[in-house]
Length: 551
Image (cartoon, rainbow, N blue to C red; front, side, top):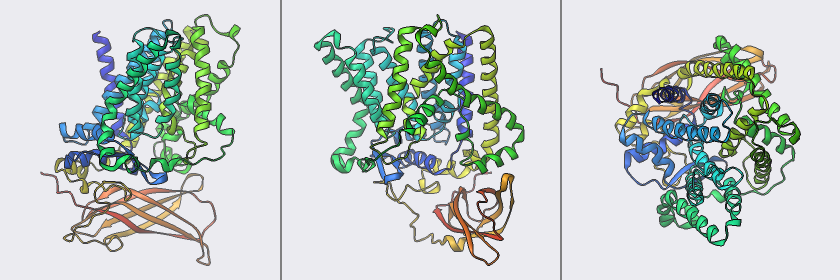
């Protein structure tokens, strides 16, 4: 027992440190943290949660703000929400790993536990503060209830009413976190109907248990609807409905993305485009060999799983639990078709994180698939792959922390939390309902970003594979206002001074009054030849300056 506690403690520390090393100042992470910071600062009941940028709408409910804000009230330091999130996600993934091992008594427990807790998707989206990270714990709870309800999977560890209550609670949890919750409704219906042979009375009890479970997180929605009514209280999320044709090719990509949840997919988590990835590995060349191996395994594993999943029953290994595997294959196929059908009705283009709520299915599927390749030699190889994956992500955390994380510039964030001043950190988006000021508006702090932000010097050079690398020095000339998210425009001109390309992006950092900083940035690949280029800062978000830290 002591050994398991020590191992889980080490895994928790690894996952927490990885989360703390991850992106913090990007817009989405900023807005989620800000929801909790505003609750911590004002103690006003939060009525809306994450934003849906595509349609400038908001998800109703208090849960997301409370999940970030309550830890800040308990321990007013920026790391507090990370600790709580990692406790939730570790507990959920450990529960799923234990349950999967109970389903597969002959499978190597160390591999299932190690895989679930350290693969890229469960590290990237359950350890740092962004709303999909809060989806995973509830998704695990939902599918534990689902598996215990469906007779083909049930181990009878939970009674059907308790299992239904867990599904209901998870559904209204995710309803306040992410727009993917409707994907769970068909699963809940299938689970409920799977018990129809027990009679109408049992169905009624299970339905009542589901509703009772849903009511617990659902209570956090009531203040929103009581104040704004059902229509306005929806936050405008119905604007996301947009029926349209979706090519059947999305079925193939959805299957690949679903299986990638349980594989070593890493490319989407390193940089936002190919040019930035190349430059990242140019700066951290020592990490590139491990990245190449992990990436290759992450590409091959989903393909291998697809091939083995298509094998007829006579080719299944003896160790495979046949009834469960047959149902699990149909469950994966049904999940893919469900996701594909859902894209016919929503505005958002197909993206993997949009159906991350189904990740537990992929994790369990991958664990069952292991029966096809299990052998003493395969276990040794898997142990090496698992160790390689952990080493790579430890290296990734080390490399990205100074560039992306909270610790790039912790002082103003800590001051905003300590002094309960959200405007030292950021403002809510302009369309946020009841989100507070969307810009600094204090007469004693006049500002003009064009005047106050100075590009002291700038230069560019060709990076790897014709990418564009800029080095700029930026200074905040204001003495009374801080700035963040400096919007820069790069303009590329030909020999006749005609514009051939123009791009824009934001510098994701906070510049206190008088601060001067030299920054390296990648501006993507050079699509067209050009003779000269210039960079200018055209806008920035003004903030209340943080006081200087005490000596």
